[in-house]
Image (cartoon, rainbow, N blue to C red):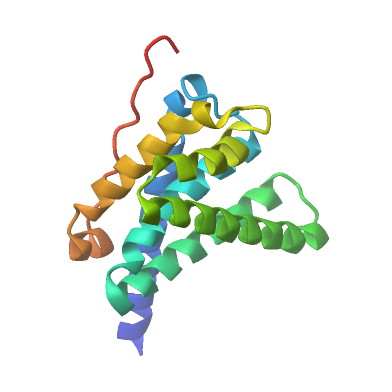
Length: 182
């Protein structure tokens, strides 16, 4: 019994470490200063969603074990979002509704991003990134650097050993390019 509890605790800690690696990458200042992602709660949520979604996508490619780790990362993400809402003094009655809306947003984003990434065509990502990450008044062409970045992250994650990624390695996201003239 204690061995099972220890294993579950280790899995939870590993998932949290993977999630926090996504948060750390999402906090890279260049996203906000060079790429135009609003430095707001929504903008930060969108970038965390992007990175966690790309990592979850990669983990799901590792079979049943990878899917279990991916679920643990998703659970860690939403535990932290729940905690963050409570710290911001969102009323207990509202937290569940907000988390549900965030979950729906996450799945919607991942569907749109997965479709674009599966096609391998940055133009399919441009519209989703313009709408979700940059705002409605932004052209799809302005989102191209984010599309290129997402494709680079996907390639970087795909090049990492799955066992290492799931059980001890740190996800290596592509470097966030610094845009000239930004």
